[in-house]
Length: 147
Image (cartoon, rainbow, N blue to C red):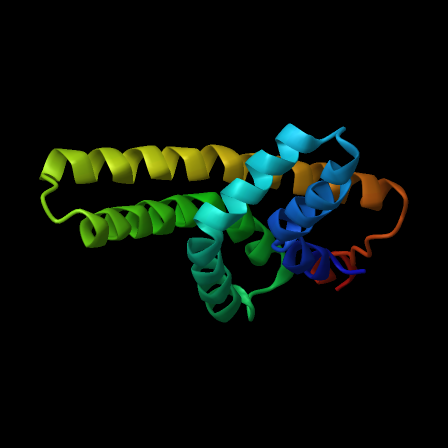
């Protein structure tokens, strides 16, 4: 597997992890973690799909190193998208909100998304290092070295 292929697949890590913990929650061992991750997926699902679409369209043609670099900063894009979606939902549901309430929803939603997003980035990096140490990730040498 190539590095870019792994990082493209790791963009689905929140969905896969939520579904796995939801499956194992039937046994009672991961019940609270499952509730948290499934709740996060329900609340942040639409913004996450928007981020996947944006990153898929914009970053797909980049080379491996640039793509991985931008993947490490994707939680900031997710935080901005999630905060904006949360503020829009609050405006739609409650028309008598003032600017301070909207700002609080935007900041709290963004911070929540940023913390959870970097937990997934850390998990994806750990899995990448593990797969690379098992020689399952193909890394081609830089061309300038051989030229």
